[in-house]
Length: 168
Length: 444
Image 1 (cartoon, rainbow over the protein chains, first blue to last red):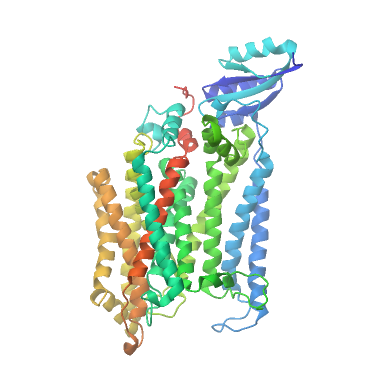
Image 2: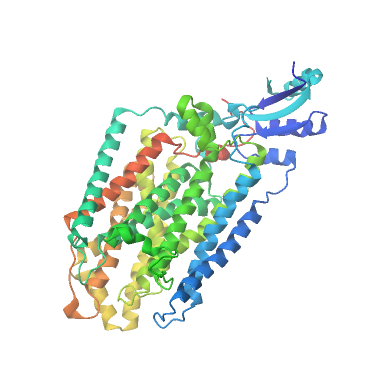
């Protein structure tokens, strides 16, 4: 018999799942994960989660892109310092277009890197304590307990109106 | 308008069921369609190969019209690509709920349209094997591209647009790929497990995903406007009558969205019928697209009028002659097709009866697509065929090779789209679920 059990309460309504998550946070059982098919406002409030920091990655990407775009255009133009259409060799207005496009490109790449870093994706070993219904119509709250507390946790989820799934 | 107001019986479970049903093994008519489209792609590829072996002269481009159907199709397909981002990014920022059912297909349309558009500079290049000359990298020739040229702006802008729209499309699809993974079996499950990157819909996943998606939308919005502005500068920076105007950027952006919205209707209406999406892609959604087409059609019509006003107000005899010739000269038929299809016929959408009838919606969307192709014909061909010096005037006619390549491009676009709708979720299940009111029992 395992020393620790993983128990998931499956709800069909977000409001009930949010209420259960809030109560679970005040209980002795550790709340491990909350799965949902959509981003839930009630769940976010219940879990009191801070704002994502992905924007810092996006900002860094954008700054790198802006500098790189301008630098690329200036570097290539100064390899052969030809006057084109009477414009200066380092023409800031046309090069702003290259800088702008690179800003967007690198900001988006930073955005994706930020999301992958903060979410820990890609990851293929996280499906063990997961119920496939959570990507469809169910909200799953995963908690753990010691062997002697299994009945208590199961009863807790049942009281909240959940279907209970015990792993291990 | 939200989905639940139009379809009160939608639940999470039946949204999944409706979308996942589209991924069931395909029937014979589907594979026949795929085969026919692939034959069209092969025909286009054969024409291109013929051109590579014989030379660019097999196309009709020559003095004075050096930019023919290849550039027309390039601008046409880039334009088609734009409304995907309008729907997925700009309308997302405006919180327009009606865009949710069509956002995924519109984003997909964007990616495939940019891929198709991106082929045309290669085709037009003639010596396609030296295409890498456009890329800035250290080389033994000691040559570097010069970013003073609008054509080099285009290389950067289109490449950026392709990468950004592909990442936007794929990132937005992650939750849906996980839904497919959780209901698939065998080899298909393995494929979707890899594609979904281990997404489990954890609260932490959603917290960062929602923010990422918002930033994607915020970044894609200025990008989409800049890309077609850059495409317009390919023309506007040339000192050619009919091209060298400051209104080209907004004129091209409005035209791009106009054509893209029409293509959205062209694709969505059969998709809705074939895959029984009537409860999700409601008539109200199509009606809202039609209303937006009226708006963009009026902007495009205003731009046509402004071009004439500017020619008249400038008192420049070359400009005046160019615009007189557009309406009354050798290419008057394409011109009047353009005006009628893009600005007059879409006004029929002012009538509620017409914009809520699927037959008219589909028919007018095709008409607008034709009109927008001719708009590019009129702009690109008309100006260089009849510019400054009368003895240098000349006419252009596409050859069979060009028609073959054009047909191939259309087949390629629809071939990719038809493959997509049967193998990946063509409607965003997550975004539809978000529009269904919270608190209901979703398992029903």
